[in-house]
Image (cartoon, rainbow, N blue to C red; front, side, top):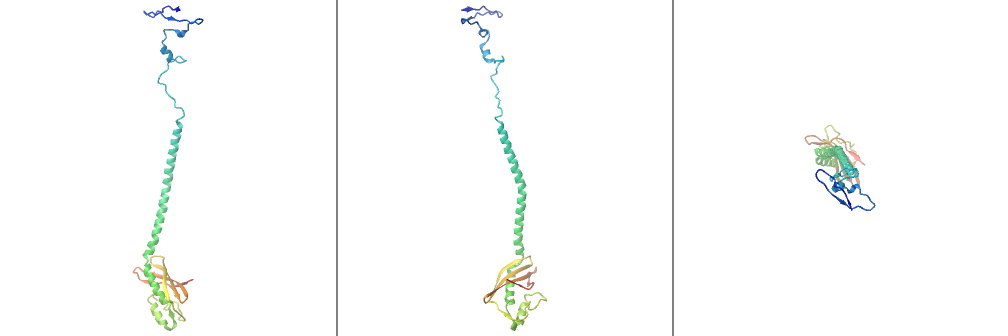
Length: 216
């Protein structure tokens, strides 16, 4: 046992007994006046450690930033593409709607049904002729033809033709006043296809505007 003398600190004195290890001198760490709690709080540099140590996140959270930026740019690109494409789609849709509405409107203004019936009656007279009754045919044609037209409308008063059936195949209206009526006629075992031009005025009156064309 080694006994250490008391050290005076003001008025207080203390006597500390230490157990000496044989062959080893007493170290400074055995100083009884140094508080053990302070030793645990000191680092190698002698500075005190703080309990509330901050944690450094490092670069581990940066990938969230890049993901957020990528999503933001993708959203911006989608908005730009939709904003540019929408006017073109609206423009093409308007053109398609206007063109589809224009065609029925044009044909609806022309009296297609009346023109078809008118051309059918005309074809029955025009395709039936005989040189023996040419004056009767001329009188019947007069109700279909415009003023100052050829009374026989191209027939030279020679030969004869008689058809058994006549039917309307279609009406092609070019505008509100003009249309071409396609007529099919059968004479015995032969078929004729005739294109009859019809004119309609604003009052609804109809007239054969030109000589019919025989189609193949």
